[in-house]
Length: 282
Image (cartoon, rainbow, N blue to C red; front, side, top):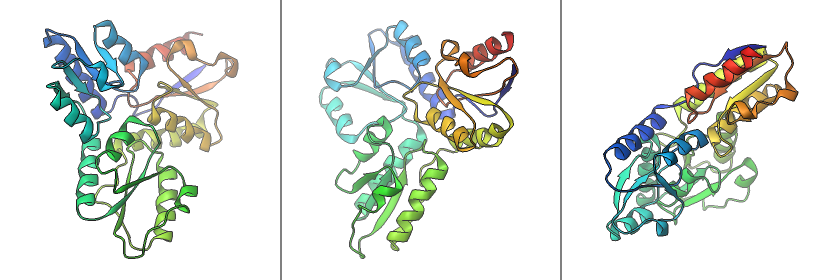
């Protein structure tokens, strides 16, 4: 088998930052450390911190009053921050700086009287936090089809924002449909797509036609990892999301297979290298 490693791949700066913050907190903490949701969407990373005693929670009710709580890279809503403060919970913010900037834009546009069309995946941690900045001003959609269901008066100030890890081609289709239906729609100062995510998608798009199979190292709940697999499939190349060596789809490979190996922004390089070595040794 021939293995091609995509460049760039793996950890982005926001993920590195969040992991480093949690590592420092754990090293210096004298009490249990709680994290609201997974620090990043990767089973290997979360598992490593769990073994160090970190407690990951999906509800503030599971955090004791006065405890140490870290907000994950995906960010949280202002309401959750306030409830934590009211309970004297000691919070540490590991929100990705780009996600934080989208929170700020949402808040500022809402204060200026805009309705904000937020394009993202329902239920994703990042989306929940951003929508929570201005729930009365934000309308969430996920597809071109949903654009048709939107209705705003022609004098309503409108803008849009994007989940950072969306597939660029799909986001463009939705934005184009919004502009067509709402001529008054204003482009935001920064729409939200993560440059690191886009570069990983561009690399996969460029290299996918040169291989037989694409393997994306990343967990099933990682949106940007799933988008990488979608990019390969757009090029009519089979693509599989794997969490590690144990998930390699051997039935889809042959001794002559040419494989592109890439990784989502929250996948550790050590796992990527383990998969690459295992494939080369077969």
